[in-house]
Amino acid sequence: MADLQAITSEKKRVFAAEYVRTWSKRGAIVKAGYSPCRQNVRDAFNRMMRDPQVKEYIAEYLKDVEMSAREVVARLAAQARGDVGDFLDEAGMVVLTEEAPTALLKSVVQTVKEDGTLNIKIDMYDAQNALIQLAKIGGLFVEKIALTDPTGAHEYLGLGDEERAARIEALLNAARKRKEEDGNQSP
Image (cartoon, rainbow, N blue to C red; front, side, top):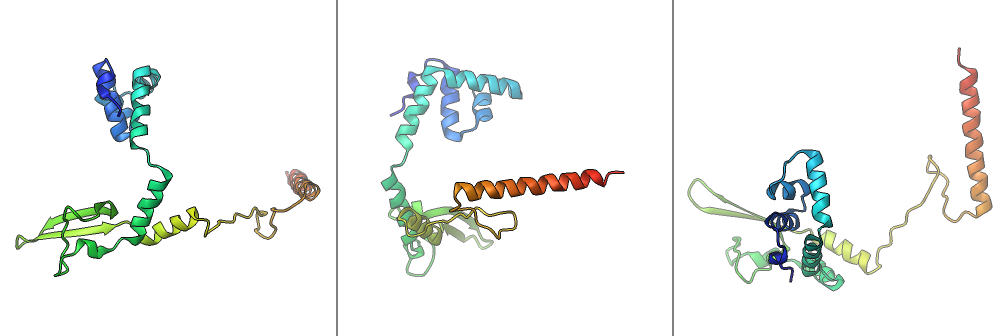
């Protein structure tokens, strides 16, 4: 577990804690008490990131919070299987209980109506997008990128070295010809 108290300087502790909370260079430097001017932020940030205690804290923090590949797939699978019914009571009203799988929620917005009743709106992560990501991970979808000429008519994948060189030479010759024609048209 990353130990913030192992950092001996208060400014460094404040910087490290704020940086891993927000990932904002400027915000962390200013919160640590440095001037917000651009050059100062850059210099102070670079000094902080070279400090062995700060580097160690950030590295430990990242180890603590990183997700394994299995965890990523599990979270995507949960999103793909997510059911809005998990957040509704028998009357169809949104209810957030301790058992509700809140990791499936992108946002929760609560408003109070004029009559004093509470209105809760939930937005779940996109199940279709999660399915697409899982299909890519599982190799079900393979994206094919075809390199083509500017018109899109001729695909360059699968060309041999000689054919590729001939096409490049043809493009260069066409460019030289256009340049000569443009030069001859000058007043």
